[in-house]
Image (tube, rainbow, N blue to C red; front, side):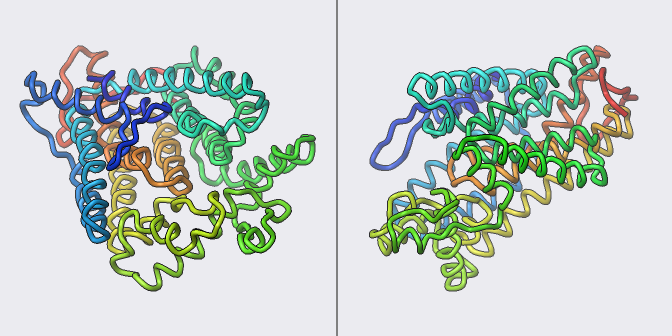
Length: 426
């Protein structure tokens, strides 16, 4: 089951898809179906668990489907099928949270993503792209998630392996710069400052400032227009692209990128739609329909979906949808803080690990969904965030009780005297 669920996540990074007239199918749906059949048919899930993290997902997913049906029946059916696959994954992961060894699952994910990353780089180099490794849309996302998984291991790894991981951590920086994946580089810088500051916010602020200063120096030293332009867009995150200039002249304004221009256009249009439909939104997937219908004269690179789940939820699902979406994130942060405090109290983790866990796991995921187009990957990320408190607690309990030769206890009633895990930092 561990392999089925982790391979299901890894399949979202593969450029394997089957486009039908109704839905887009990936290996993800097949693997989730196999996990459901295995869990239900073998009696593995005799005692079903409906955790708080799983239940908090249901209102948002349900509202997303209702909002899709408000557009038209075909759109609603398409969204229902997609949310069924996503909901089935959430259900399977919720059942497995009690027995899933998270450290082994993270190792599998990291190895798989590293292989995908190697293939992506090799493919681009073989096709003459020495920089800007973004032509394979699905595999390029590994640049974003490898630092997150690697940082998660760095928190708990013992001292013997820590130096090796830090060498690997340093080695992926030039790859991220050459890839041109701005959010991957931004997440890497945030994680680096958090790890070096050991989760202390007071120390992170000057470290982040130093990181941006280093990025500025890099952008001036590197004699490459693409790298310089990508670095500048990170250094000036609030600078919006000039889509009016593109429409009028057919060319991008100096310093603009297609991504920035598209985001500027999407922000302007979504602001208008939000003012017209504040409570319920325009309907799931309706933004792209409006762009294709009313702005068919725009270049293809502008006629894309909203890149950012918070903005998309407010535009398409209204204030109700955004509140349900934000509720999942707030609850995950509060519940994870409770789990971290409980684990710290029982000696399962050290103080530095307690500070780092929310920063390393939640903040990068928020950056990702806040800058990425909607889709199965964004929903799977939301599921992992919502179930993170359960996965963290049960993962720590399994590690401890495996060492002590006991059976894991429940999240509500921990009846053990804990001790710090090997390699924990206080």
